[in-house]
Image (cartoon, rainbow, N blue to C red; front, side):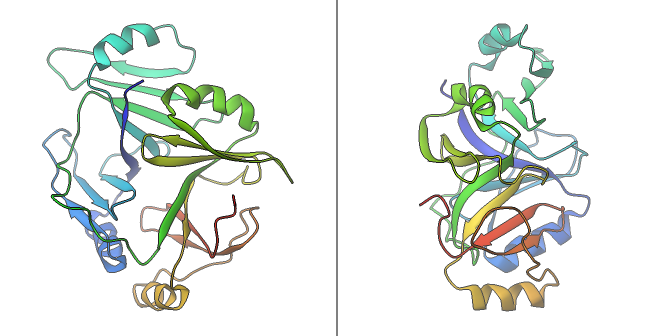
Length: 237
Protein backbone atom coordinates (compact mmCIF):
# COMPACT_ATOMS: atom_id res chain seq x y z
CA UNK A 1 0.00 0.00 0.00
CA UNK A 2 1.41 3.39 -1.03
CA UNK A 3 0.47 5.19 2.19
CA UNK A 4 2.94 7.83 3.40
CA UNK A 5 3.58 8.74 7.01
CA UNK A 6 1.98 12.09 7.75
CA UNK A 7 2.14 12.63 11.53
CA UNK A 8 1.54 11.28 14.98
CA UNK A 9 -1.71 13.04 15.83
CA UNK A 10 -2.30 14.06 19.44
CA UNK A 11 -4.81 16.23 21.30
CA UNK A 12 -3.45 19.55 22.55
CA UNK A 13 -5.70 21.59 24.83
CA UNK A 14 -3.11 24.40 24.94
CA UNK A 15 -1.41 24.88 21.57
CA UNK A 16 0.85 27.76 22.72
CA UNK A 17 2.19 25.63 25.60
CA UNK A 18 2.75 22.67 23.30
CA UNK A 19 4.53 24.78 20.68
CA UNK A 20 6.74 26.39 23.31
CA UNK A 21 7.75 22.93 24.57
CA UNK A 22 8.72 21.63 21.14
CA UNK A 23 10.47 24.81 20.04
CA UNK A 24 12.52 24.80 23.25
CA UNK A 25 13.81 21.34 22.32
CA UNK A 26 14.67 22.40 18.77
CA UNK A 27 11.63 21.29 16.77
CA UNK A 28 10.54 23.26 13.72
CA UNK A 29 6.94 24.39 13.19
CA UNK A 30 5.48 23.71 9.74
CA UNK A 31 2.80 25.60 7.80
CA UNK A 32 -0.59 23.92 8.06
CA UNK A 33 -3.50 23.83 5.61
CA UNK A 34 -7.09 24.81 6.45
CA UNK A 35 -8.14 21.16 6.54
CA UNK A 36 -9.60 21.00 10.03
CA UNK A 37 -12.19 23.22 11.72
CA UNK A 38 -10.29 22.97 15.02
CA UNK A 39 -6.95 24.62 15.92
CA UNK A 40 -4.05 22.67 14.44
CA UNK A 41 -0.25 22.97 14.43
CA UNK A 42 2.55 20.68 13.25
CA UNK A 43 6.14 20.31 14.47
CA UNK A 44 9.02 18.18 13.22
CA UNK A 45 12.65 17.40 13.94
CA UNK A 46 13.26 16.05 10.44
CA UNK A 47 12.66 12.46 11.60
CA UNK A 48 9.18 12.44 13.07
CA UNK A 49 6.26 14.83 12.63
CA UNK A 50 3.73 15.52 15.38
CA UNK A 51 0.31 16.99 14.68
CA UNK A 52 -1.14 19.02 17.56
CA UNK A 53 -4.93 19.06 17.33
CA UNK A 54 -7.28 21.24 19.34
CA UNK A 55 -9.76 18.38 19.19
CA UNK A 56 -10.24 15.52 21.63
CA UNK A 57 -9.00 12.19 20.29
CA UNK A 58 -9.43 9.12 22.47
CA UNK A 59 -5.71 8.35 22.02
CA UNK A 60 -2.79 9.38 19.81
CA UNK A 61 -3.05 8.24 16.19
CA UNK A 62 -0.64 7.32 13.43
CA UNK A 63 -1.84 9.39 10.46
CA UNK A 64 -0.98 8.30 6.93
CA UNK A 65 -1.82 10.03 3.67
CA UNK A 66 -3.23 7.84 0.92
CA UNK A 67 -4.04 9.66 -2.33
CA UNK A 68 -6.43 6.98 -3.63
CA UNK A 69 -8.24 6.65 -0.32
CA UNK A 70 -11.72 6.55 -1.86
CA UNK A 71 -10.92 3.31 -3.70
CA UNK A 72 -9.15 1.81 -0.71
CA UNK A 73 -12.11 2.70 1.53
CA UNK A 74 -14.36 0.43 -0.52
CA UNK A 75 -12.08 -2.49 0.36
CA UNK A 76 -12.20 -1.57 4.06
CA UNK A 77 -15.98 -1.41 4.34
CA UNK A 78 -16.28 -4.84 6.00
CA UNK A 79 -13.01 -4.69 7.95
CA UNK A 80 -13.74 -5.60 11.60
CA UNK A 81 -11.13 -3.04 12.69
CA UNK A 82 -12.92 -0.15 10.99
CA UNK A 83 -13.94 2.54 13.50
CA UNK A 84 -15.29 5.25 11.22
CA UNK A 85 -15.27 6.35 7.59
CA UNK A 86 -16.02 9.63 5.84
CA UNK A 87 -15.98 9.41 2.05
CA UNK A 88 -17.97 12.33 0.72
CA UNK A 89 -17.33 14.60 -2.31
CA UNK A 90 -18.14 17.60 -0.10
CA UNK A 91 -15.66 16.73 2.67
CA UNK A 92 -12.09 15.61 3.33
CA UNK A 93 -11.90 11.82 2.99
CA UNK A 94 -10.75 9.97 6.10
CA UNK A 95 -10.85 6.43 7.51
CA UNK A 96 -10.11 5.43 11.11
CA UNK A 97 -9.09 1.90 12.08
CA UNK A 98 -7.77 0.42 15.32
CA UNK A 99 -5.83 -2.73 16.16
CA UNK A 100 -6.92 -5.16 18.86
CA UNK A 101 -5.11 -3.07 21.50
CA UNK A 102 -7.06 0.04 20.39
CA UNK A 103 -4.07 1.79 18.78
CA UNK A 104 -5.48 3.99 16.04
CA UNK A 105 -4.52 4.30 12.38
CA UNK A 106 -5.90 7.35 10.59
CA UNK A 107 -5.93 7.29 6.79
CA UNK A 108 -6.31 10.69 5.09
CA UNK A 109 -6.65 11.51 1.41
CA UNK A 110 -3.94 14.22 1.33
CA UNK A 111 -1.33 16.10 3.31
CA UNK A 112 -2.58 18.56 5.91
CA UNK A 113 0.58 20.69 6.12
CA UNK A 114 3.40 21.89 3.86
CA UNK A 115 6.72 20.03 4.15
CA UNK A 116 9.81 21.96 5.18
CA UNK A 117 11.80 23.48 2.32
CA UNK A 118 14.91 21.76 3.70
CA UNK A 119 15.48 19.04 6.28
CA UNK A 120 15.02 20.52 9.78
CA UNK A 121 17.77 19.96 12.34
CA UNK A 122 17.37 17.23 14.92
CA UNK A 123 16.14 18.20 18.35
CA UNK A 124 17.93 17.78 21.66
CA UNK A 125 16.13 14.45 22.02
CA UNK A 126 18.50 12.93 19.45
CA UNK A 127 17.53 10.04 17.16
CA UNK A 128 14.05 8.58 16.94
CA UNK A 129 14.09 4.88 17.78
CA UNK A 130 10.39 4.16 17.33
CA UNK A 131 6.81 4.98 18.11
CA UNK A 132 6.28 2.34 20.79
CA UNK A 133 2.86 0.68 20.98
CA UNK A 134 2.22 -1.52 24.04
CA UNK A 135 0.51 -4.72 22.84
CA UNK A 136 -0.67 -7.97 24.34
CA UNK A 137 0.43 -10.12 21.38
CA UNK A 138 3.07 -8.64 19.05
CA UNK A 139 2.59 -11.28 16.35
CA UNK A 140 -1.16 -10.73 16.25
CA UNK A 141 -0.67 -6.96 16.24
CA UNK A 142 1.80 -7.25 13.36
CA UNK A 143 -0.94 -8.77 11.20
CA UNK A 144 -2.91 -5.53 11.50
CA UNK A 145 0.06 -3.23 10.77
CA UNK A 146 1.81 -5.33 8.11
CA UNK A 147 -0.24 -4.06 5.12
CA UNK A 148 0.98 -0.52 5.90
CA UNK A 149 4.60 -1.53 6.57
CA UNK A 150 7.44 -1.50 4.06
CA UNK A 151 10.04 -3.34 6.17
CA UNK A 152 10.69 -5.34 9.33
CA UNK A 153 13.46 -3.57 11.27
CA UNK A 154 14.03 -5.71 14.37
CA UNK A 155 12.64 -8.57 16.44
CA UNK A 156 13.41 -9.10 20.13
CA UNK A 157 12.08 -12.36 21.57
CA UNK A 158 13.25 -12.19 25.19
CA UNK A 159 12.16 -11.46 27.86
CA UNK A 160 9.04 -10.92 25.74
CA UNK A 161 8.30 -10.17 22.11
CA UNK A 162 9.09 -6.74 20.68
CA UNK A 163 8.80 -6.19 16.93
CA UNK A 164 9.83 -3.05 15.05
CA UNK A 165 8.28 -2.28 11.68
CA UNK A 166 8.79 0.60 9.28
CA UNK A 167 5.57 2.33 8.30
CA UNK A 168 6.99 4.48 5.53
CA UNK A 169 9.56 6.63 7.42
CA UNK A 170 8.16 5.93 10.91
CA UNK A 171 9.65 3.04 12.93
CA UNK A 172 6.84 1.46 14.96
CA UNK A 173 7.52 -0.87 17.89
CA UNK A 174 4.98 -3.50 18.91
CA UNK A 175 6.02 -4.15 22.50
CA UNK A 176 4.74 -6.82 24.85
CA UNK A 177 7.30 -5.55 27.39
CA UNK A 178 5.61 -2.15 27.57
CA UNK A 179 2.05 -3.47 27.84
CA UNK A 180 -0.09 -1.59 30.28
CA UNK A 181 1.52 1.72 29.28
CA UNK A 182 0.35 4.39 26.85
CA UNK A 183 1.94 4.73 23.40
CA UNK A 184 5.19 6.71 23.51
CA UNK A 185 8.00 8.00 21.33
CA UNK A 186 11.34 6.36 22.11
CA UNK A 187 14.59 8.27 21.50
CA UNK A 188 18.34 7.70 21.64
CA UNK A 189 19.72 10.87 23.18
CA UNK A 190 23.12 12.25 22.16
CA UNK A 191 23.68 14.70 25.04
CA UNK A 192 21.71 13.77 28.15
CA UNK A 193 23.15 16.61 30.25
CA UNK A 194 22.07 19.33 27.82
CA UNK A 195 18.65 17.74 27.40
CA UNK A 196 18.21 17.57 31.18
CA UNK A 197 19.05 21.26 31.60
CA UNK A 198 16.52 22.25 28.92
CA UNK A 199 13.78 20.05 30.34
CA UNK A 200 14.29 21.43 33.84
CA UNK A 201 14.20 24.99 32.51
CA UNK A 202 10.86 24.50 30.76
CA UNK A 203 9.32 22.58 33.66
CA UNK A 204 9.25 19.07 32.16
CA UNK A 205 12.07 17.21 33.95
CA UNK A 206 13.03 13.61 33.27
CA UNK A 207 11.06 11.17 35.42
CA UNK A 208 11.70 7.54 36.29
CA UNK A 209 11.03 5.31 33.31
CA UNK A 210 9.21 2.26 34.64
CA UNK A 211 8.15 1.23 31.14
CA UNK A 212 9.40 -2.36 31.21
CA UNK A 213 12.16 -1.83 28.62
CA UNK A 214 15.78 -2.08 29.79
CA UNK A 215 18.24 0.80 29.36
CA UNK A 216 15.79 3.68 29.66
CA UNK A 217 17.31 6.87 31.14
CA UNK A 218 13.99 8.53 31.87
CA UNK A 219 10.56 9.56 30.71
CA UNK A 220 9.44 13.02 29.61
CA UNK A 221 5.77 13.99 29.57
CA UNK A 222 4.81 16.61 26.98
CA UNK A 223 2.13 19.27 27.63
CA UNK A 224 -0.32 17.05 25.72
CA UNK A 225 0.45 14.10 28.02
CA UNK A 226 2.48 12.24 25.39
CA UNK A 227 5.35 10.18 26.79
CA UNK A 228 8.92 10.43 25.44
CA UNK A 229 11.18 7.61 26.66
CA UNK A 230 14.91 8.43 26.47
CA UNK A 231 17.65 5.83 25.96
CA UNK A 232 21.44 5.92 25.65
CA UNK A 233 21.53 3.12 23.06
CA UNK A 234 19.03 1.40 20.79
CA UNK A 235 17.52 -1.37 22.91
CA UNK A 236 16.77 -3.34 19.72
CA UNK A 237 20.49 -3.72 18.81
